[in-house]
Image (cartoon, rainbow, N blue to C red; front, side, top):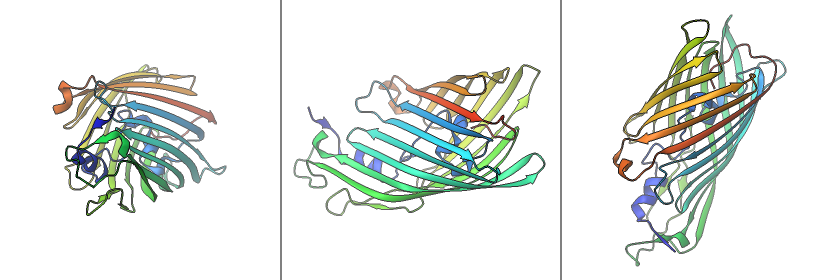
Length: 301
């Protein structure tokens, strides 16, 4: 059965009129590599991470995100390499991409480094016209078929980090590519997205730490969106915490790190926007695997 989608919804997805044209994660403090290539090689380990996010459960064809990433330092610790695969699905629209990342690490003090990172790859945007029923049957902006475009993509990031802190800035979809998925004069673009993030670990006692985090996201012409988060850690491997995302959601999350090699995380978003009467929440699962040397200087990833 065809689903009802008005053309304004598709433009909302494709023209960058919201902060989710690129993937959004509530556990961003575990997965900085998803939006900043400077995190590549920022630990002394080989890191693999996977995240699955199901947004606005209870709403038919609501967004779903899948992300898989790998990154590791070079033998001398001065460079980092990585790669990622991702898919965002929202109704009849799909965004799929692959990227490779490179970073260069500069030691600035005895206990901190600066990392500069870039990533390049390809992103495909697709619309399945067979899943769309328009209110105006004479509207020719979309055809009753699958349409897709493959575009080059790039990101840049910088990161200053130490054992207890990190501050990073990055930009994604740097090419601002035009998308010609619609017929006629309708136009979409892969809008440039900007991110600013930071966090610090406060040691409360031998067994407890408190870590506040923040993430600011901006895409023109929308006002910046801010995530304010904090978690309490027990023995550095068990945590619980929460976040508030402006004009969007309140978040509760928890996680556990097993023997420094395996990290498990879960979060649930409680929608605070106008969608709260229709959504049963957003669920996100994180899995991280770490191999290699013991950590020395690392930000929270």
